[in-house]
Length: 404
Image 1 (cartoon, rainbow, N blue to C red):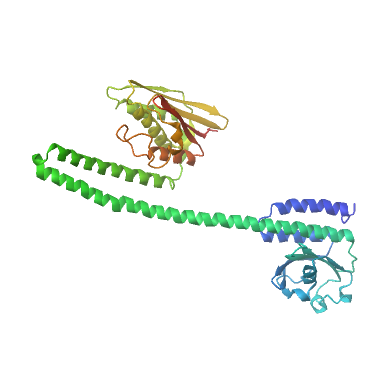
Image 2 (image 1 turned 120 degrees about the vertical axis):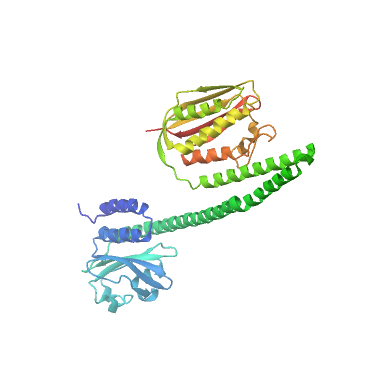
């Protein structure tokens, strides 16, 4: 079959469309188009011309010998400019018989005939040119194929611009995020150093008063001093929690095989050793292993089990169930207790920094633990959520990618 027939040309055009759909920069677009333009018509050369204000910029070419790559000419003195200004294609069989052609610019070249089509007929942004070393009468089908290629090229260039704009936005947002992280680091430094100093001073002054006044402190004054000391300790805990939360965003994962059943059993055993006269009952399923950061995942279990132990304190018998379900590519773990629970109406605040669902006088805490847990789970490409009823307990669920 003749490779220049409209049918074969259209088949090739389809392949070009597929190639252009993957292009993400102008250089790639020009490389695809210059090659396709020659092949569609069997030309001896092709140029990719861009409109540069009032100039024609010959940005790229594919030809049997050099043409004008890298040169700029006024729109009014070159045939590509004519196609752009008139917003329509042009075909010339004998260039030296057409006064629109700057003959002196063509004499050093092989060109005898040409066809030029605008890239976008409404407000053209460039042109595609085909050239022949022998006199060639361009057919209507060849012009249509070239114009179709130019129209596809226009759409691709617009898509590339959109892609580049989006890419730049991502870069800008990344830069903003890096700046925000630096600000957070500076804030964390200030918190850890500048705020700790006055806290230490407050503790020191209270200690001096207690030792110097001794028995002269009445019960009310002694209680006041103890409340000051406890408030300072609470503030120090808040600072430690804030620093831990800020560091979590920068910590890199070191994934290894984690024996979850043993890890959870060890954590529960440590709480059993501290239970005193409490009736504390753990039901632990045969939890499967996963690939995860051992230190961070242990922190998840410590925080969730610690919460379960804390919020079942007022129950005669604290029952804590730790189990799992396999969910396609994920494993769903859960920690269920029969403790104080909470109102699900406020569940959206559960994982916020310094957000608490209970009064400090009822259950101690600073509201950082669950925020840390959520960050750790998200760093492992998992999710965490909870379900609860007041005075009936709470269940925390989280997913982690299954071990493959």
